Amino acid sequence: MEYKLNKSIVHLKNELEFSGIYCIKNLTNNKCYVGSSKNIFNRLRYHISQLNNNNHTNNILQNDWNKFRAIDFTVKILELVEGAHNNRLIIECKWIKKLEGYPYGYNLNLSTHGYRSRKYENQYYPKFHLSQLTTNIAATRFQNGEHIFKIARDYGCDEEYVRNKIITYVNENNLEMIRGG
Image (cartoon, rainbow, N blue to C red; front, side):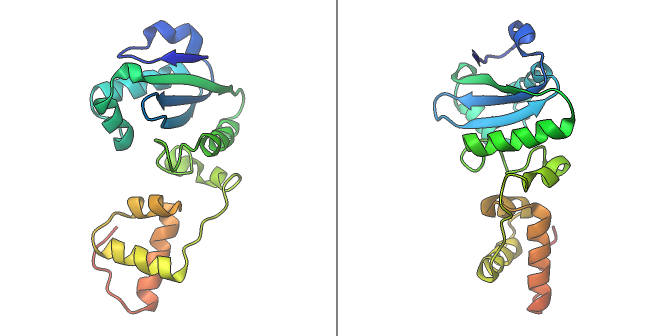
């Protein structure tokens, strides 16, 4: 079932107090954010509070929340998941891929919840590797001031992987690491 979002979701407490995978969808541009929680209601309440206070960590979602109206967003329970936290993260990865939450939606990368679940990402996504040319371009972008996070996101790679590739490239080519990160 799909529910309209607004400034508050208190009226949805009974329908959303479950463990599972959810999707926040922008009805105007069809972008979605796939997430998981042991209590979907509490997690959505957190998202909405952050969005309403213009303080959400996902700038893309925040910008669209500010641009469109809250009622232009819906939430849908994709799958109820009981049991271990790891199972929920693995299933969330599958849904991110299926709904294209990354790279076309609001999910910022292929993995779920950043550092906590990178180990689950490769169970559903092929390992992306940077070619020599791409590594050169990534190193140049980094030296020109771009953040590793953005470079990694653009190439669909893990931040640590991109950082290591850039450091290796710089060392092998006797280049100077102009900026840190």
